[in-house]
Amino acid sequence: MFGSRRPFRGRSLTILSLLAAASLMVCSMSATRADAAQSGAVTGVVVDQLGGVVANAKVTLTRDGQRVADATADAEGRFTLAVSDAGRYGVDVSAQGFSAAHVDAFFVPAGARVPVRVTLSVGIEQAVVVTAAAESVPASQAGASVTVIDRSVIDSLATPDVASAIRLVPGVNIVQSGNRGSGTSLFVRGGESRFNKVLIDGVPANDIGGLFDFADLDTAGVGRIEVSRNANSVLFGDDALAGVVAVTTERGHTRTPQVTYAIDGGTLGTQRHDATIGGATNRVDYFAAYSFFDTDNDVANSAYRRNSFATRIGIAANASTDITAVFRAGNGRVGLPNATAFYGLADDTTQKQDAQLFSLAAESRVSPRLRTTARYALLHTDYHTTNPSPTGEYVDPFGFGGNYLGHDVTITGANGYSVTGQSILDYGGTYPQQYDAETTRHVISGQATYQVQRALS
Image (cartoon, rainbow, N blue to C red; front, side, top):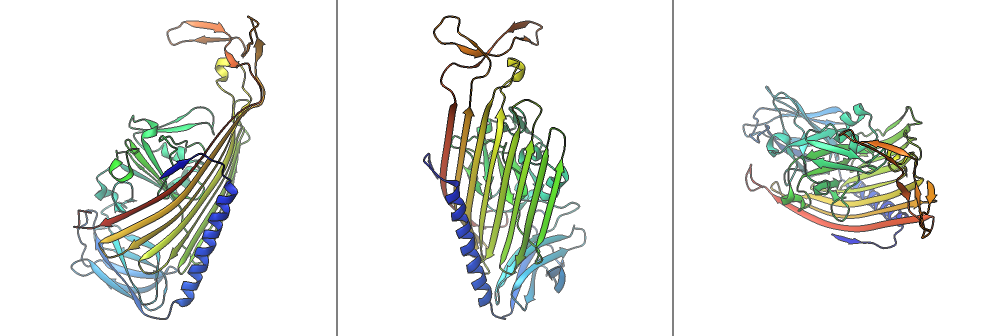
């Protein structure tokens, strides 16, 4: 991982990501034309919550929601389903005493054998987690305090930002320094906010030093949020001492493109627009989302506006390798009125934030026991803060250059004592005053996971 501060243009990152996505699309179309009408198969094993095999489970192979073939798992929980044509298939599994399970659509190349692993749960559905083990496992096998917030929960909450959804997680505390759009930090079980690892589609998104501001992280395009309330420095480094937050972009599933648009509004001039499109065609799945959020908030000079965009393209390069490209971009503008109850009037400072993330990852199932992942990512953030003019009453009692004071305010403490006076709101000097912070990071990472035994990776 490398960090630097240097001139950078978000437009260059956008062009780079679009070119990469276009290249992936061309490769996928070429691969699709190359698929011949050879028979393949879907092979797999059915296990329970603790990894034990489930015998005699009923397995159904589907395509576009239609039944294609059926099979029954043997005494070791294994099954094989023949596939006559290359395409995107899904698997439905049921067994007596277990809740039914579904494996989302995946691509089966011509003549290939694609392995799948299906976990059945007793009573309730088990979420699959990725922040507590070297590879995806059911929550019952993770042995860690993990909460998964999927898209259905996010939609039911109708929340515009990830921070509001995380408030549901036990043992965590979201602290916001002011109105919506102001600095927002996460504290897990009393740990410092800089001790949380934040992953966006597997890419570390923390600023250098460990801090992460959740204020501008929109739920647009977010398929799931996973919060691990355990120290996980073994997998994710020494900046995961309190917990891990993993945000994953949604992916397309249906052969027929799905398009959605939603609009809502409320008091204080609040409005939100959301639009998405997603689908899948044989080797390629695609998804894109755009969101616009705007509110005046309830304090002068605290209006907040945000634009967010997210897209994900996945390609099944062959029977064992999946390539995924993700691009997320957002910009926000918020007024910073300062502590108006302390000064009696609002400051006129504003802050603009611009961020982009591009990730290209390849995941391969080298063998039933060995999986590898390689990823390259580019992250860029740019903060611009402007105080256009001094606010308050200019006072220069000694003739050496004064400061700007707020109104007369009386502050009463919890012990009953009170004090009345004026506080310095802006210091004397040259205006406008500006502060810029820009960070560009390149991330190259890889991981290999080998399954030694059922309970040991």
